[in-house]
Length: 173
Image (cartoon, rainbow, N blue to C red; front, side, top):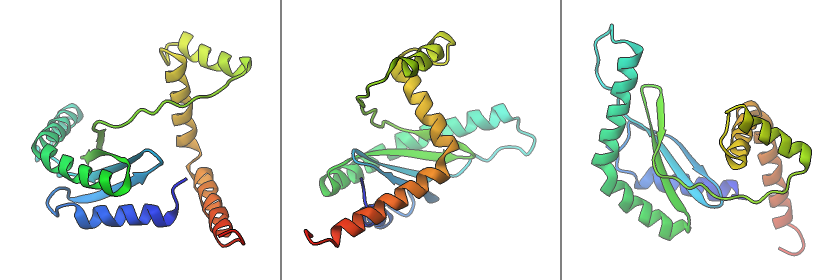
C-alpha cells in the first residue's frame, strides 16, 4: 500500500513539474502500486447559450481529442521522468465541461478464487448482458462497490496508514 507521505511526494512532484499552461487546474493525482493517474481540467469550448446537451457533449469530446493530440509529446516527457523517479507508469486524463476521459491506462490482471455462489453472481451479470466475461463482471462489481462505499473505503485506508506508522515505530524499525 502507498503511504500518505509517498502519495504527497508524488502529488507535490507533479504540482511542481507540470507546466502551468497544461491544465486549468489539476483535479486529482491518484496513486496505487502500479500506476499514477493525473487528471486535469481543461477549458470548455465556447458555445451558444442555447446549445443542446448533445452539442455540448460533442464539443467537449472534440476539445478532449484536441488536447490529447496537442499535448502528447509534453505528457510523454513528463511521464518518462516520473516513471524513472517513482518506478510506476503514468496515465493521463482530463475533465472538460463535466465530461471525464482517461487516456491510455493500465488494466492490471488480478487473480481471485471464487466459490460457486460468487461465480453465479458473475454468470448472472453475463447472462443479463451487463458484462461479456467473468473478468468484466468482476470489474463491474468492484466499480459498484467503489461508488457506494467511498466513505467506508476512505476510513479503511486511514486505518491502514495508522497501522503502517505504528509498525514503522516498532522495535524492529
